[in-house]
Amino acid sequence: MPIKKLDLQLIPLLHATDIRAKRKVLSRTLEGAWAALMKGHGMEFAGFRKYTYGDDASRIDWGASLRANETLVREFEEYKTVNTLIMLDMSDTMLFSSQKKLKAEYAAELVFNLAVSILDNGDSVGYVLFNSQVVAKTLPSVGRRVVYDFATALSNPNHYGGKKDLKKVVTTVDLLLKQKAIIILVSDFIGFDVGWEKYIRMMSEKFDLIGIMIRDPRDRVFPETGSQFLLEDPFSEERIHVDIGEYRYLFEETVKKEELYVKSVFETAKSGFLSLSTDGDQLTPIIQYFRKRAAYVK
Image 1 (cartoon, rainbow, N blue to C red):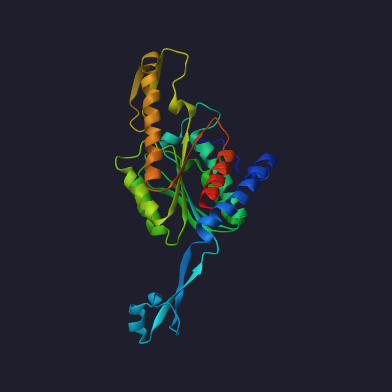
Image 2 (cartoon, helix red, strand yellow):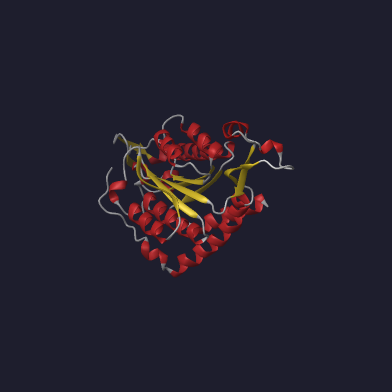
């Protein structure tokens, strides 16, 4: 389901007064939330040095010591910055809207503002845009060039559409990202292949993972007016007529169960999770989420 044009004006968001104010609040919130999670407790291997009397014997690396023919201990240092990788679903299911913006456009604005806030906090940001494969990527780094590169990638219509394959994307991320990092996975979580939960667990074991689910109101409820609607599968393009009155309740109950299940997958994997709707604010729920997370860690 390729698209020709996007309703995205990302660079002007840098100067929009109301958005800038919320980004400043988010940046200050992240400083507390991520410092508690990563900077205060994360340690990174820095190298070897000769063992001296009084060193902790558990830090001796016997393999390196044998190779060097002298006793060596491992040195560690605290993380100086937090590395963040934003993974954004660009597939066909994100190209839907009953609102002013597609789910993909809403998500693009969200992750752009989030990236700017992270950079303003002095941390590094990278991104992976994906459908059935990675369509654009960059490793976490700092500086304003990241902002403009990210805006360019998000604004490219050629990056949108197609099926989705979480297995292939997670494998790519695992090879791409060698350092400790926070991964923020943004998707509607609709249309993933059977077994997608396994790859959430895989990422959670290696990284600090946060899932952000983006849904359009029509993903959750049928309209109250009208009797029949023509629905189309975004992948197979199969169409069916649905009697709204007959299936409204069943549809809504099924969606509630599905969304609770997605949330439970992240919670079981001890990962963060929040859900957003395209008819609501983007940044305020993010700020509230990280405030709660910082308070919980403290």
